[in-house]
Image (cartoon, rainbow, N blue to C red):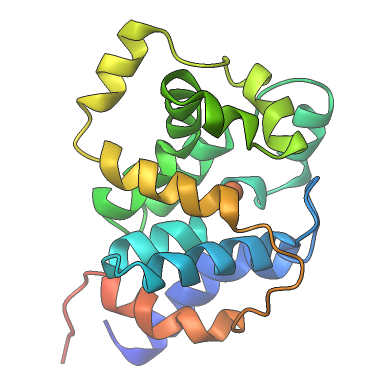
Length: 190
Ligand code: FE
């Protein structure tokens, strides 16, 4: 990919943050600050670049248009994790898309296996849990646990729940361009 093509791809990828990244979503942080805090935590934990990107981008499905937010407001699950993962599959492999796709399932899994986890959820997260199907039953837990990206999704979910600190300063959006570029996976062309 040429530099111009990379820049255009990143502009397209990050456009949802320019569109709606400064919105709040029932938490005390903006959508961008939330994703960036999540990515900073992933980095601090030594996560692979793909998982750091997944952390940054995990809620991108909530930023695509206002229809999803309106649906959730009306008590309908807009399945933002699938919208986000499907979008990201245009540019990234499964190590980015699947932790994103599974981050809501990871919440439902953790609520089932760890009562302390559920007790620690934010009010907004608790509200959406009901819409998302509530804690997993035993069969769903087994299916989730067998997924090759389950461990990454669980790690992402823990950062997701912690990445809601209104006092935390985060790096600007541009700071993530080199990391994202390294994952685009398209070989350089002369
Ligand atoms: Fe999130």
